[in-house]
Image 1: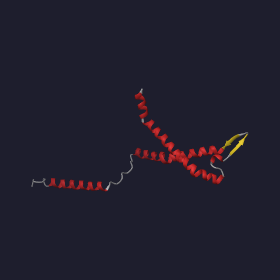
Image 2: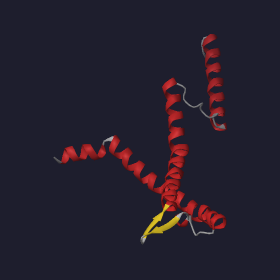
Image 3: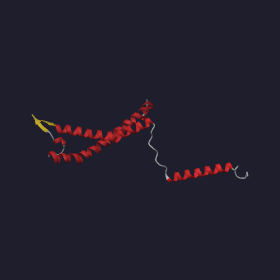
Length: 140
């Protein structure tokens, strides 16, 4: 029973899901900060309300309705979804498409020390080829 649980927890899908939930939570915090720090003051400047939840608020028979509350939830959802799509999903889909075609990203240019080592290797190979053409040392 414990082996089955260990297999379930360590399976790639469960780990991917856990990572997705954590990243989603982190993006939600970022978007909430943007909404609280930028959008709500803008709404306050335009509509004279503290945030979107105060926009479209009315009462009928002591029941309070808030269109702004729904608008605020939709706006936050759209911001989180857009951030996740453009920052994670779109680049991962692009990378998966390139891998599927067999086009990996072009390797970076080798470092200067690697180029020097390659040059030394080529010189040694050329010197070795010349020495075997003349029969090697001591065989003249």
